[in-house]
Image 1 (tube, rainbow, N blue to C red):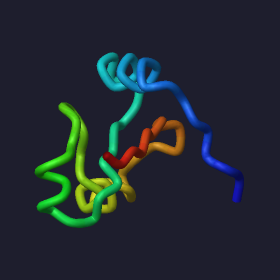
Image 2: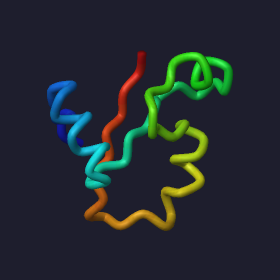
Image 3: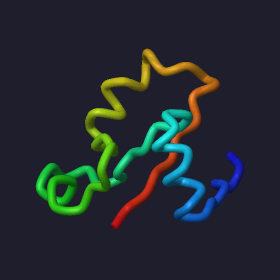
Image 4: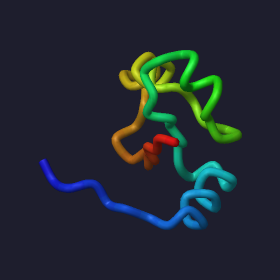
Length: 65
């Protein structure tokens, strides 16, 4: 497995706003997600549910607060 690619906050914001990347809050706990997620982000639980239907071309940005 390769190391993750790190991007700037601004680049993440631009990609998420443009809809070209899926923004995923990496907290597995619902309470932490509810208290710390960024606008437009989905929870790790929701990401896992969507994973089978995501394209291999889909760009995904994980973050934790």
